[in-house]
Structures are given as C-alpha cells and as structure tokens.
Length: 106
Length: 275
Image (cartoon, rainbow over all chains, first blue to last red; front, side):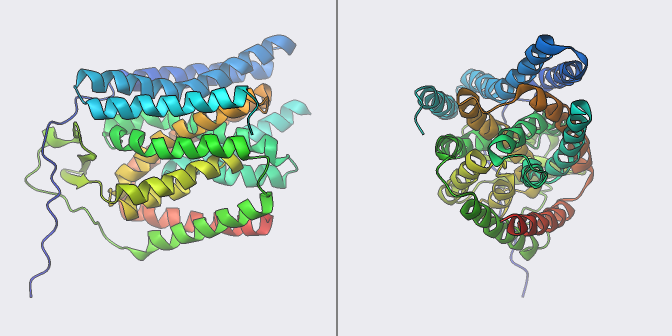
C-alpha cells in the first residue's frame, strides 16, 4: 500500500510584497539606539539617567505597535481590506485597554 | 552596589532572552520566576519580564524578516485574541492568586512540552513545484511559503478558532504573570494550526512583542514600571535576543521543537517549585 500523498496546501493568490525593506533597517536602528541609550542610563547622573531610561522604555513599548501601524499601511496599499480591519481592530483593543487603565478600572 | 545589581539584571535578561528567541518561547517565562526567586516582588518582575519580551522581539525582527519566515497576517489576526487577553490580564492582575496562576502556568507548559515531543518529522513537506518567487505570505489569506534550505515549503493555517482560544489564554497569562505566553503560542500555532514550526516560532517572536506592549501600556498607566532598572534589563535582552535569533535560523525545525519541549519541562518544574 502506498503512503498517503502529502496534502497540497500550496496557496493560490498573490504573494505579499512585504519584504521588510523598511522594517528591517528601522528595527536595527531602534535596537542600536535603545542599547546605546540603555548603556548611557547606567553612566549618566540622576535626572538625566531617568529621562534616558524612560525614553528606552517608551521606544520598546511603542515599536511593536508602530510595526502594526506600518503593516496596516502596507496592507492598504495591497488592497487587503480584511487585514487592514484586523490591524486597526488590534490597535483599537490596545487603545481601549489604555483608556480603561487611565480611568483606574481593575 | 546598585550598579552591580543592575548589571546582574542585565546578564540575567541576556541569557533568558537568547533562549526565548531561539524557540519562540519568550525569555520572560524564565526571567520572571528567577527574579521572584531573588526576592523581587512579582508586581515589579512582571513588567520587567514583558519589557524583555518586547525588546527581544524587536531584536529578532530584522533577521526573521530577511528570512521571510514571519507571517504578519497570521500574527495580527491571532494578536486580536492575545492582546485582548493581555489587556484583561493586566487590568485584573491584582485580583488573581499568584499560587493559582503559577500552577496554571506549570500545567500549560507541561502540556505544550508533550505536544512538542509527540510529533516527529515535518508535517508540511517541501513542494518541488514551488519557486523562490512563491516565498512569503499570501494577500487575503492566512497562508504562505517559506524556504527550508534549497527547498520551498507551502503551508496553510487550519483550526483558526481553536488557535485564537489558545492565543487569548497566552495573552491573559502575559498580562497577569509577565511571561510572554510564547510557550503556548508557538506549540499552538505549530501543532493545532498546522503552521510549520519555523514560521510558528518566527511569527510568535513577532506577536509576543505586541502582546507585551498591550500589557505594558496598562502597567505604565498604573505606575508599575521602574524606568532605570527596565533600561538595563532591556539592553541585556536586546543582545540576547539577537544571538538567539541568529542561532534559530541555523537549526532544523525538529531540533527547535525538541529544545523547546525540554525548556518547557524545565520551566514547568521551576514554576511548581516556585508555587
């Protein structure tokens, strides 16, 4: 008896043009900047160290959300409306969470 | 003395982030229990854990983007459930018993480890009909193809609803315990949704950054983030994340799966001891 042939999941349709040409350098730049600022926060005195450390935290928290925003923009260019809606809904969920936290809901 | 302590946190973050990026696990699942064992309150350790996850995700991004193993569409769709769970978890994190949550984490980690070792070989075989131009994700679908050496492996996502359930759980654990939930996401994506392990691990590395950001926004507004300790922990995790991501692309999917399973057993044991 012959073995079961493998499924043929080859998806049809257009291959996305997203190649990371912008994301990759931006993420590399962010990584290097955050490392430099993080090391600077170790040697800087008092308030300056706190300010730099706060910038590090802000960059780390914001970058994944900016990636989603960038993807929404790219999917819009690809006329992939369903995923544009998914991306915006994701950002909406996070914004709602922020609003609830700001209102002191827990 | 404080500088020595901060360098210790940085070294700890480097090691755990490297391991996390390697298996799409997220270093926080190791870092947070260790920080708590060193005497740090869980409420302070959780945001630090999530910052290492987000930083590791950023560091691993360029390499995985160039390999074209991340499926962004799958990532964003599954993140709808994960980020909802993370926000809910962060908002209610003060109410849930720490012991109960730790036992829950241990059970899930053991289950994920079993799921990882149960299968052998590749579920998605390379397709000789595919060409290099087929590599990438498909517009309008949760599908794609990725390079495995000289061959191309096509795939399509199955059982989305079940996968979303696990992602919601992973997000809730991230928001409450500060662990990334990657140890749930990667096995669920690979074993339940039938996405190739390499794509599942890379997509998880992308999504855990978003899950962490969702919870960290809430933690920041609750005033639970210590910026200076966070900054040094982030430096350690960025360096570790880069090292882990480089190693990930040189290893076979089967090996990654086995390493991931061993790590999950270790994590589960640490969690039981902690509880």
